[in-house]
Amino acid sequence: MSKRKSIYSVRKKAFLNQGGLCFYCKTPMWEEDPEPFSKSYNLSRKQANLLQCTGEHLVPHSEQGGDTEANIVAACSYCNLKRHKAKFPKSPDEYRVYVLKRIQKGKWHQIAPLVPGLALKS
Image 1 (spheres, helix red, strand yellow):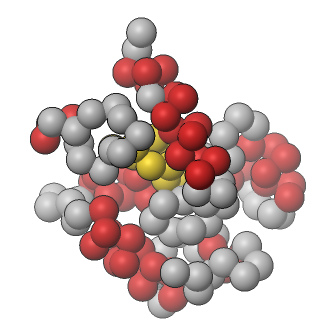
Image 2 (image 1 turned 90 degrees about the horizontal axis):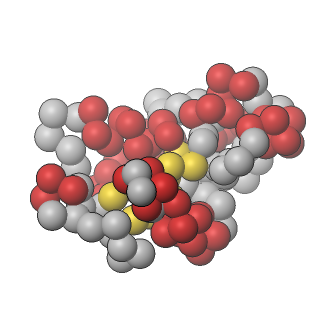
């Protein structure tokens, strides 16, 4: 079984437990088909792709983080990629605070303001 499939059920459970919102930016995400999602929020396909649900390891495999419910949350593709591109990634809690502050300043993915009522949620 591939790594991607091995966390599918754990990611799915996290997605449902989080009400379909990204762990970091609190913006809605999609799982299976971007078309209804993009139409629902009036987003382009490119914008919707940024909000695809991914399984985010809070503690990475390289630091002995496992594929467990306690270690995997649902995060949008944008937040997940940005966190791991950093030379010195922040802890999950520090990163969440950082992302929400960036959204409030209008300096994140610019999609949260398009989703009514979510731009300033913390």
